[in-house]
Amino acid sequence: LCVGAGATAAELMALDADSRAQKGELEIVLAQYKENVTWSRPYSKVLTIYCKGGAACAKDSLRLPNVGREAHTFLHHIVTNYDRLANWTVFSQGGEPKQGYQGHGRGGGHMLNGATFDDYVLYPRRIENPEAFFLMTSKIHLPSLRHALRTSFRVREGQVMPHMTALPPMCPKHTNVENGLKDAWGPFTDASSVAWLRRFLSGKCGIAEDAIGDGMLFLFERYMELPYPEGGIFHFAQGARFAASAERIRQRPVSFYKALLDLVSGESDPCLGYFFEWAWYYIIGRPETSPCSMTEAASARLVAEEETVMAARALSDRGISGEAGISGEADEETAETCELKDDDVCLQQSPDWGSTYKCEASTQWCVSWAKDMQRCCP
Image 1 (cartoon, one colour):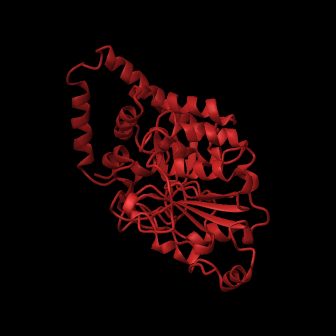
Image 2 (cartoon, one colour):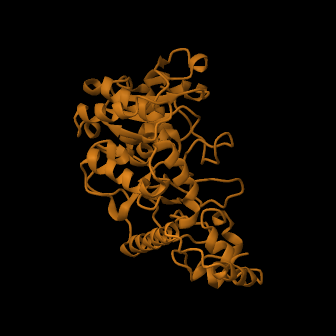
Image 3 (cartoon, rainbow, N blue to C red):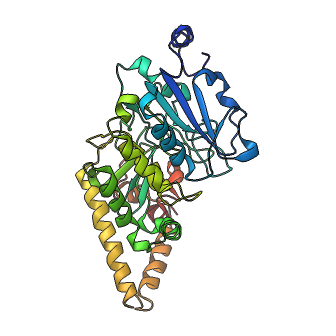
């Protein structure tokens, strides 16, 4: 078996020489639509491609109906092969696993800086009896839908990236960013900046915008049967790439996976496909704790801010937001202040930032943390 450059020479030689390196030992499951999957040819001995893209499908792929996106594909594989799962299975979308993600059609294959696809394949050779392998690139506060990105996950050209000298851990080691040079969680998006996500999910799921978070929480409680994630924070890997042992997968009965499969078998792009991308860590097996820690202070702040937003919405619904000129005057005053200069101290003293932030080196947060950046770094 020949694999790519992420492995050491010794690992490659051992894997190539190991006669057990067949699908009973290791399997790579790709969910293809119309992506070019030629990058996966070196893994052909252990590769299973499921495709929903018609004429664009790889020649040796297994065809599935175009429903449920990758969630349907992964769950179909688990349900169909539950009693004969490989000892270690890598699940991935069909696109080439390049670094980061900059949006549909703009590049990136959801790989974290410092990691390669080989790290998912070879993980059981590096760690004794591993249950699963996730590299968390994002986190979302489900009640509010506010989210944050890992600084070592590239989302735009020219982004300052932390220098990684080894395989990154599942979660960042550092709690605060230092000029973009540490592997850490960036700040959560401003509460007002998730309006588009609420609108999108509301239309997709057919429920009111202010019920999205509660609806997702209901799904977790109804199906997962696990302790609620700490602070309401779901940590996840963008692009739904992960690996797991057969033992971890079989911590849940096949009926559990079959029930989830049924939920995503009716539409090509179901609402629940997005929830599943956030929840794979909890779907695969029965983990009893959250994958990454969440400080009580940060959690409390998110809850308090969400309560403020919901209260403002309630006032708006009752027609109380129309005290004309008050918010407008405040915005003009703020705008005048912001036009004066970049204020590093303003940024550093803002909640969830830190003493090492500087406006000039924090431009990657202009969209995801717009309010503070516009206020402090105009």
